[in-house]
Amino acid sequence: DISSKFSYKKPEKITVLCENLTGYKNLIQLISDAYISGKRVGSVPVINLQSLNKKSCEGLLALIGGKGSYLNLLLESQDNNSIREVIKLWQDIFVQDTLFLVLQKLSEDDISLLVIHETVNCAIKNDLAVVATQSVCFLEQKDFDAHEIRVCVSEGYTLEDKNRNQSYDQHQFFCDANYMHKLFSNIKVAVDNTVLIAKRCNVELDLWVPSLPSFPVPKGSTEADYLRVLSRKGLDERLKKNNFDAKTAEDKEKYYARLEEELDVIIKMGFPGYFLIVADFIAWSRENNIPVGPGRGSGAGSIVAYALKITDIDPIPYDLLFERFLNPERVSMPDFDVDFCVDGRDRVIE
Image 1 (spheres, rainbow, N blue to C red):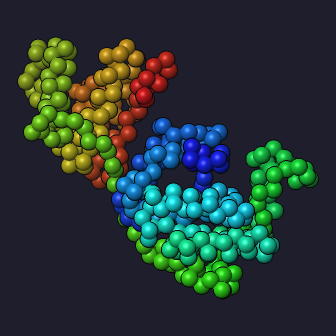
Image 2 (tube, rainbow, N blue to C red):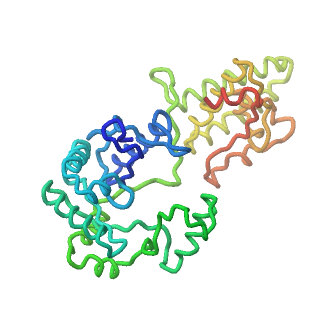
């Protein structure tokens, strides 16, 4: 949202790419900020300009300009003073070698050629790199008609409506390298920079490794230790409440042996934090008079869940299997099916 700095009232669109893991984390934070505290245009969250600075944008590459951008509008009108202001804005946010000016040739008309010429001049004056891109909306040129139909359906127009907003053209297909080299044969560096940017973007993500928030535990303890303490204490309370003092030592031993077996599996698989988190918000719900179901699905087979009061079902008398819920032979995130009353679940989510 640049409306606070310029007279342009629409959100400005820029392309941001992650150069490294720092950039990826910063981008996640910026997107979260947009959803939590940013403005909205319809259902689309917009990042506040105040959220952008050199620190919050570290590790990111920015491509500014191109179809539909404020900079493009200024380049078309050759408003040099405003162009300098906009360039300075982005140079104050992104360090020099992470900022690129976009070149797009969607047609051969005079305006398109003028914008390219002015963009190159702007890059030279401000010591910035240019990069050739395409505002891609469909895969092949022949897909344009299908895309127009989709847009009409989305916006509630018919193809025959002469008053409809025709924002797209047939050149917005995915171009191969040969096509782009021919299109920008006189500005070869702009095409070469696409490869340079691709080589600079190196982010490795552990896509299938669970990433849980850290659960706060007492000083000197770990999540695993804390889970053992709470589980043993919880099972003591459960058995006492169920008058297990009158049961045989053999019966009680069966419960504690099962508890330790489950704890070993949970900790070995790296999920003590998950159990602590689920137990925490279920306990909060009960303390705040929000009805919670007794537990269903495979999670009801866990004695640890029963001890932590995640479920209210004792799995031992019913021969419920913990392995259906969590099994070291099939590594996947555990998934408790939790039912909250419709009148209070929004408070739990919050």
